[in-house]
Length: 87
Image 1 (cartoon, rainbow, N blue to C red):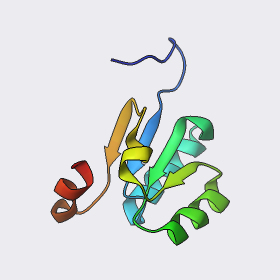
Image 2: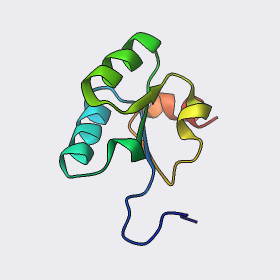
Image 3: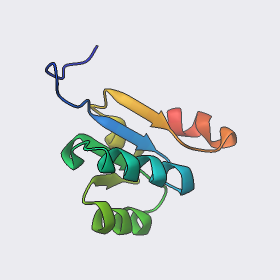
Image 4: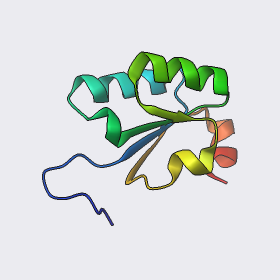
């Protein structure tokens, strides 16, 4: 169940902000989705810092923290990584 007010953007987490996930994140921002309603999930803190500098969105290497509060979770990881990310 969404707790976004009608007409607002949902809180979205992109899990796996690598090649495809970064494109998804960038397109969401370009389409007008507010950065404050987006979050990214990555494997390393170095990658997280680069994405924060580039897109000014919240990015974390902690899966639980990144997914917490998401109304939409976009899983952009390789199939062999999905189970670990969703655990």
